[in-house]
Image 1 (tube, rainbow, N blue to C red):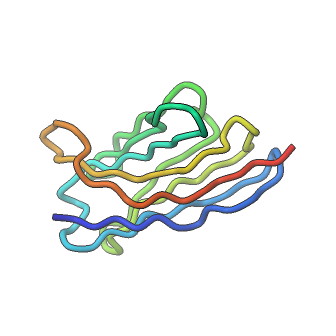
Image 2: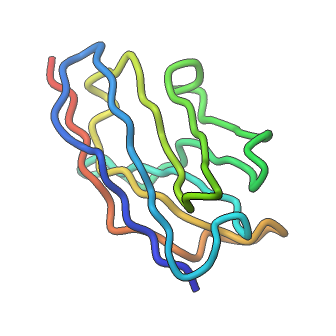
Length: 119
């Protein structure tokens, strides 16, 4: 079992930056691949990106590639989502999730943190 808590959301202007954090407890996050997802009002939750346990393998959805960066600090049991050049369409509740490094679905989720980008 792992518990996830996101933080760092808020209101930011177009072009601004935010860094989200996802703190894990219960088990070390090095046992999991960690992902970030987001859900805008009236839309399905969508995959934003994920990172391997080593931090050397990260993938992103095309809409955020080059603007968002995921990193992790396994010693702190924390994963980060650095978001730069924010756009209004990035407005959503952002969730972190965890899944086994061997594959499968994301089975652990945080409660989410709101990001609002104002134009």
